Length: 107
Image (cartoon, rainbow, N blue to C red):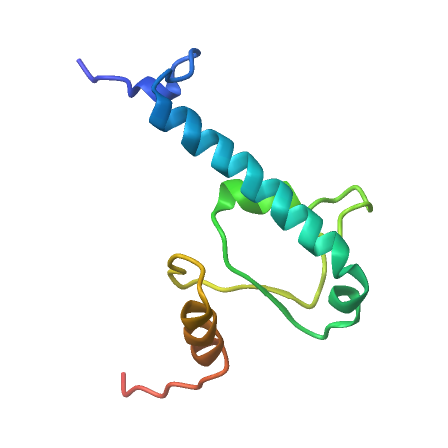
C-alpha cells in the first residue's frame, strides 16, 4: 500500500517549521506582487521580461484578469528555465550572465 504524504491530506501540517515556511511563502508572494505593482510602468514598457519561478508561484502573479502587471498572454514574457538559488546580488549577476550569453555546443 502506498503511503500518502501528510501535505496532500486535508489537514495542514501543524509543526512550527511548516507554519513558518507557509508564512514566509505568503510574505514572499505579497512582496512580489507589491514590487511588480511598484514598477508597473517600467515592466509594461519592457521589450523582454524573464520569469524564473515555480509553477505554483507563477499562477500567483501571472493573472488573466487585467489587473495583474504580467499576464500569461504577454508576448514579451519568457520563462527562464534555470535553477535560481537564494536571492542575492551575486545570484542576480549569475542569472543575468546566463540569460544574456550564447553557448554553442557541438551536438
